[in-house]
Image (cartoon, rainbow over the protein chains, first blue to last red):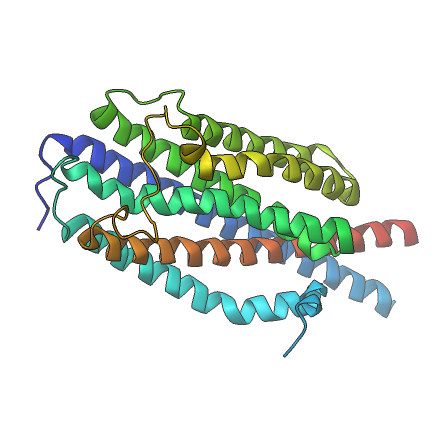
Length: 54
Length: 244
């Protein structure tokens, strides 16, 4: 299944590895930051609702 | 049809982006999986470049998006400067880390390809140099956002920086046309059939480009939503502090 990359195997595989690592990193960082921001806003809004109720 | 300016309303923007995002994530994952598997496993070696031709499925789309991300930031910055819509300033801010990632991939894969083909990882070629300067502009843009506390002042100054950096974004694209002495070859995608890459590489390349475009839009929409939430939480916290 694996294609024969010949003498350039190291170059091709490292290019794919570097790119996939960067792509996964930006997606993961975005999702983690997004979830934290959503949770922080919900917490602040809940606090505000409590203050309004008092 | 709704006016584009309606999306300057953060609530409307969040509601619409949450409807669109699942489709964008799925399309980007599907196109990237199909394009990269097709390109890596099912295309032949090039008669000159050997198997290193498979690097174009990453290098060309990432380089394209590195430049287009800056152009998108330029448009959003101009909207901020002219119409003062906060969502546009936040969209520009959200796009910068995505753009810098694309620039890093383009520079990294280019260097890895360059060593066996040109005999060097790096050359001070016009296109490579203008791309490196674009990368530094991305870093400067993100540092400026982080350094200024007042969000409106940060948006003003980063918008001006974005206007200046646009010169290098355009140079990165057209440098090979301005100067002929560089190592970097001409555009891989051209309307001129003679200059284009061969069809066997072209179709998987188009699928990969579509994947990168969808991924870029998914990330920018998602990250803009994050910026809107951070801004809203900050505003509510400040209001509560003033009221206390």
